[in-house]
Image 1 (spheres, helix red, strand yellow):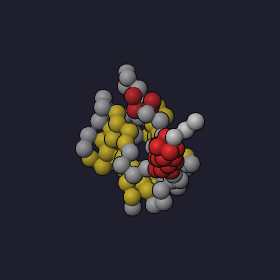
Image 2: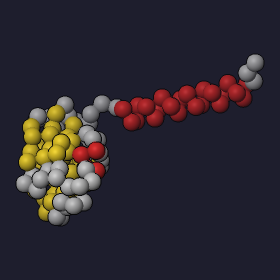
Image 3: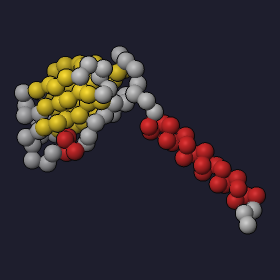
Image 4: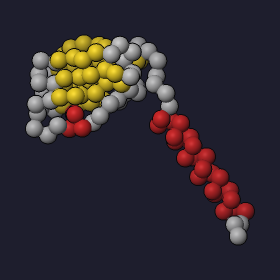
Amino acid sequence: MMKQIDKILAAGLLLAAVLLGIFLFAGKEEGTRAVVTIDGTEYGSYALDKEQTIDLGTGNHLEIRGGEIRMTEADCPDQICVQTGSISKEHEMIVCMPHKVIVEIRKE
């Protein structure tokens, strides 16, 4: 049988899990853009609400779909930027070190 302290602890853990879930999986933020820099120079800024594909001319290709952006293709050996997957929340980044490409989500 559960003691009073066990019930309080269980309720606290459940509340923490719910709050973490809301924080991590909340809906897409409105008014966000993907800012792409190549070798420290801003290449472009793209609204996440307009579906498109972008060829960066470095061997990297980006895709914006469903309010998210992802690196779909890269000719670098490690493919970490492709494996990062989609991003959509402010301050999230995709980085391709070999091509010096950074994709960062920012609020407008």
